[in-house]
Amino acid sequence: MIQVTPHIAIDERELEERFIRAGGPGGQNVNKVSTAVQLRFDALGSPSLPEGVKRRLRGVAGSRLTSEGELIITAQSHRSQERNREDAVQRLVEILRQAAHTPRHRTPTRPTLGSKTRRLEAKTHRGKVKRLRSEPPSAG
Image (cartoon, rainbow, N blue to C red; front, top):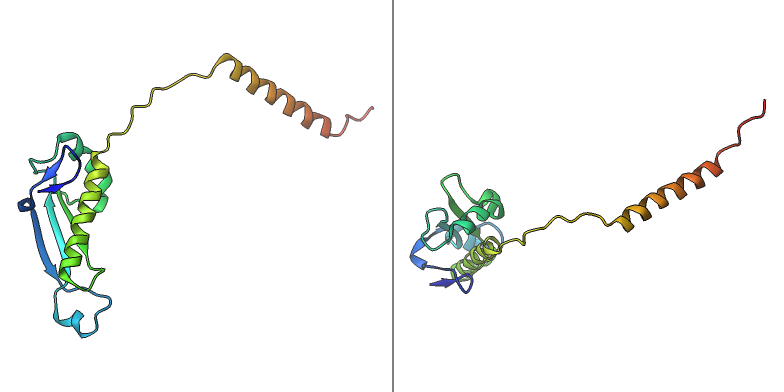
């Protein structure tokens, strides 16, 4: 089990790993060995995730979430399969943690009478300053 939050854990059997060839450092190793990891997780079909997390995941995951609801993460920054696998799982957990965080409900407030008065007085004062800067009207 991969612990995402204290209340959410996903089973490792829900993850599908594919090893592909990676670009970047590695010399001849890059051409021979499939070290990059493509991690697939059926997020919208997962029984481990609550509905609210699935809904928020669409916004958090962005283009990494396919139209079928599968979350795809590709990790290829390291030279070994094991480190790339750990990196991909860590990134998956981070995305799921962001989606698990419920945003606080904003209660709209209204400006106080004092703040309205101060704002209008400041506007009046600025208008007077600007009026004083202008040329006086010509007499005649």
